[in-house]
Structure formats: structure tokens, C-alpha cells
Length: 214
Image (cartoon, rainbow, N blue to C red; front, side, top):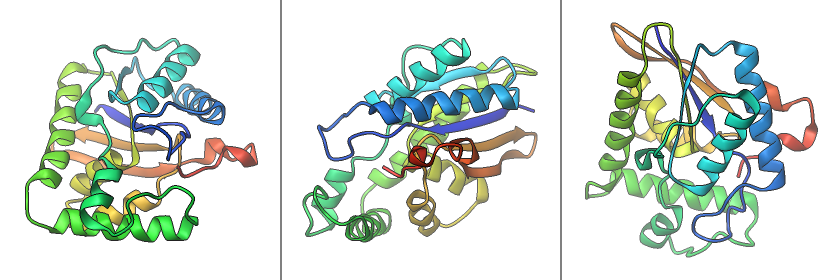
């Protein structure tokens, strides 16, 4: 039964350019995630990344620390949603830069709720694309082999929502809790894909500054 480790990217400059890389702290977080994957005994894992810089850079740090080869090319279906475009379409707040964290989260939650419940197919394409990409990864694994997917909080929330057969409203709550470099575990069996654990970040608690959300 393949185990799928969904690793959220390390800390990034959330309000920098449109496709920012990870910070020095984000690199340390990714190193901690890699060490945790080794501790858990991931079996000959296939390491896959989304195509955003923060995802690729985090995956490269994990690859370097674990000697797990990073598969190429990157998989854009594991890319995060465009929060700036969603805010522009569904909120009066055009940017989150310089705002209090509570204001930021409330504005993003409101915009995401409008996005997933409004007309159009963008939300469904996002969720379906992530699910199909996961299916493709599983087809590339073999008996006794696991998968590590380095991606973002929204993709992880969408895949967990699917695994739980939950309503789309759960997506907002799941996305809100995501910790940088956390590890979520799915298992793939004959009855489908199931959620084993969500947003585990115990491996980051050794150093207080490693725990971040953006």
C-alpha cells in the first residue's frame, strides 16, 4: 500500500514577487522535513514537486538532505491557487501586504469561500487537476514504494477534502491551519485514497522559530 507524504513548502516571502522562493528559514524547515522523512522510513520514495519556485526549492533541499532524486519535470497541477487573483475577484482588499495577520486570514477566508461557491469552473479545475496529478504519481510508484509530493497548503487541503469526501467548505478550514514544511500523510489502497494524518509539524518543534504559517 503506497504511502503519500504531502510536504508543504518552506517559508517564503508571501507578499514578495508573484513566484517567490523560500527564505533562509524556509530552507531550514525543508531540511527538517527531509530529516523527518528519513526517520519515518519512506520506502524508495518518488519525489515530485509543483512548478512554483518555493515548491521546487523546498524539494531540492529535501533531495539534497535525503539523497532522494527529484523527479523532473515539475508538475504544475500541484501549483498553489493564485491568492492575489482570488482576492482581486472576491474581496475589496487588493493586497495583504502590511496587514495584521488576523485581517489577512479573514480576508483570504472570505475570498476563498466566495471562490469555491461562486459560478465558474476555476475552483473545480484546481481540485480535479490536483487529484489527477496525484493519480499520475501513484501510477509511477510500484509495490513497496512511497511518494513524496512537495506542494502548497491549498493543494494539500484539496486532496484531503477529496480523501475525506468532505464538502468544499472544509477546504477553507484545512487551508487555514497549514504549517510551513508540515507533513500530511495519505495512503492508497484498494478502496481508494485515505487520510492518515494532517499537517503534522512535530519535527519543527525542536526550534521555536521554525514554526511559521506563510
